[in-house]
Amino acid sequence: MKAICLTLFLATTLGASAAPVAASALIESPQTGGLQLKSLSSISFGPEGLLLVAEPGTASVLAIQTGDVGPAQARLGKPVADISAVIADGLGAKKEDITVKDLAVNQASGRVYLAVQRRPDNAVMIVAVDAAGKVAPLNLDPLPWVRVTLPGGTASKVTNITDVAFDKDRVFATGTCNEEFASRIFTIPVPIKHGATASVFSAETYHVAHRKWETKAPIQSFVPYSSKEGTYVVGAFACTPVAKFKVDDLESGAQVKGVSMVELGSGNRPLDLFSYEDKSGKEWLVVHTQRFKQNAFGPSKMWGARISMDYLNAAETNEKAARRDEKEAKGPDGIEIVDALFGAVQVDKLSNTEIVVLRDTAGTLSLEVAALP
Image (tube, rainbow, N blue to C red; front, side, top):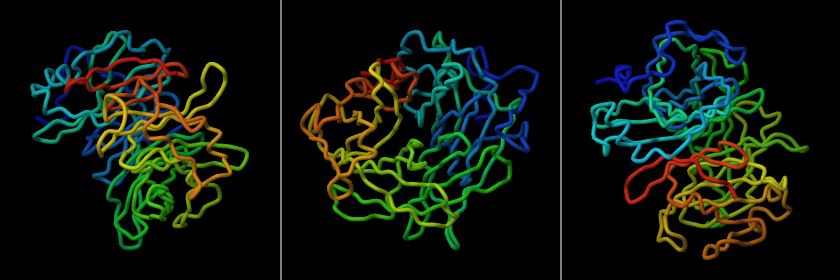
């Protein structure tokens, strides 16, 4: 059974109305119909319900106008227990054959979207979860979409796309190519034009825990960040430096050297990044990660920390970057464990006070809203 057969899944299919969705000014030369997803690695939302999809199998980024533009009333009201079983039941599959590869919240409506893969045929799909916890596939047929190719190198190809995000007048993506400078940052101008290609930069990062510069380790997850000094991609890497890359005024093919500001600890792989402002007005960067070495703290290998955004402009960087105390909940000042992220498999920001968490409890996945500190 192919992903296109998902209209049989549950009672309602999101986007199933007969009338096509109108394209917005965010995309150019849109296509309608005929879109079949071949692979999925990351999803995220821009404004006006614009869904960004990283498709590593075709080395491309898709922008899909979902038509899900609010009002913001689709916030998940109560946890959805064993959501893998809910999805599997609709597909006639076993829940152990369902993998949720990513999660994204549409800020325009509050609705949660999941990127899903099914075994053994490895079909991929995007499903949406509404306020009542009802799950339905995203019907791609009536939706305008565009595809942009990510370039490799002179004699290389894109081997993976790790993350994708919208930032005002452009879209950023990160990934790898099969070259010595394998870590890549891609930029796509808005409006996103179907059939266009992206600009590409090679990224070099100082890995604080290893005390060396590296060119192969990819940015696993990132957020765009702007300050009076310019525009940056702030990304996290395995083992786990958090670094910023200035991306203003770069020509495609350029190399950009990152500045590492914080080291969260060796033996971790970052999964998600987002920023938020707490009730006092202080800004934080949240890094959600998975420990792949022996656990040194907490009840789960899935965990997260928040970092004061002041660190993004700290004077101490690279070799002297701030290091988190791996055995304590806090420290140094401005770096704290976020308890709500223990057990989190995927996470995305819902608002400045709440997050949506896909949580693993003894092998069962639940979808829930949790409070930010």
